[in-house]
Image (cartoon, rainbow, N blue to C red):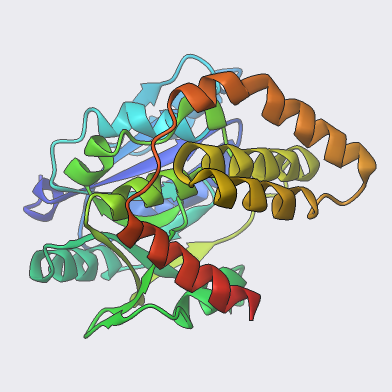
Length: 291
């Protein structure tokens, strides 16, 4: 095991995408840092994931037993023994030397909990639009690293392992779709920073095996649930109305409403409003995005 493997572990989440997983593991296995890699099989069928992983010595495989969505990552992090954990999906991978740079930055800045990488999309390496917005964050920058953020992208970030665990990881009820928002709020509320680090690079070749409409529904539902979990009542209501207005049609509107109401009692039971400092960070970024 390399000395670097004692510092960072890469967690890869996969579900029924053996071709994409093979490509990602090929890139990760070729990294000069030689990090430890854990693949979480999120309820794939047919045993294809085991066949792929067996081709890459040293890569560990964990079975979720069912499709847990984003919370499948929690299973891997529970077994991570390194101080830092990097995440990718089965259609993303880290560029050479980016993980080493991330570790060096986190060692230098103990108050940073999460670094979000710059994402290059497809063979042509087109800049991801979300990263463009991150680069123009209105929050103060960390010198030598990048601008502070109020969120991150689950498949393109490096975290302090203890910050992930202390914040509780990903909420199982959310499944997938905007699942990062709640975790980001709790990390910020604990006094840590989330920072966009353009010197880090993640490649993303989006899989064609996606359920776009279902994901849209879950994005809207989860945004509303997050609001009622962490925002003051008035802000939560305003956020709910703005989110519902993003529905593409009446059919989606009522699907989202039904989904929100179905889980709302359990959500309200775990409601814990954020501290004023954290709320101010959110307001600053949201007002900037509105302008």
